[in-house]
Image (tube, rainbow, N blue to C red; front, side):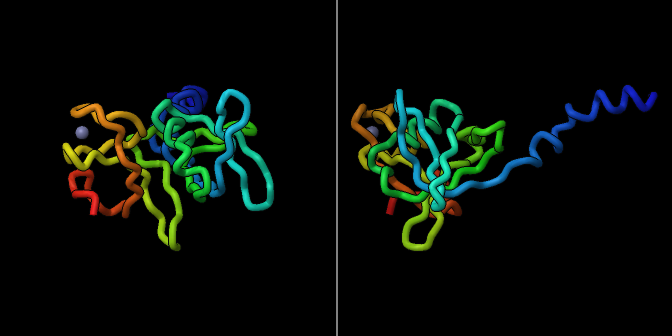
Length: 140
Ligand SMILES: [Zn+2]
């Protein structure tokens, strides 16, 4: 293999793609078209991108006064949140970092994005919790 070919292959290596995740912290405000923007403590604003599920969490009015911690990558002047299944959306409450989940107490079903329970169609409860707990562990 020539040196030139090696250089072309490098960017496709998965450890390079996964190694760039960082965390950002701050409140989330919504600007035009409910577009989420991270508001850092120094007032700096960073537009947020992510999958539909992550954006739904950021838009949840129950989290409007919480400090978020988001894992992902800076892309240009924006921040791209890692996919929802990697558990990239946290809030800080009482000095503890909690992963944002949603819980239906009727069906004992957990979800990672707000909405209606897939089983009973009731609105699911916000249930931020210790990231060490398993999805199947009950709410309290
Ligand atoms: Zn349910």
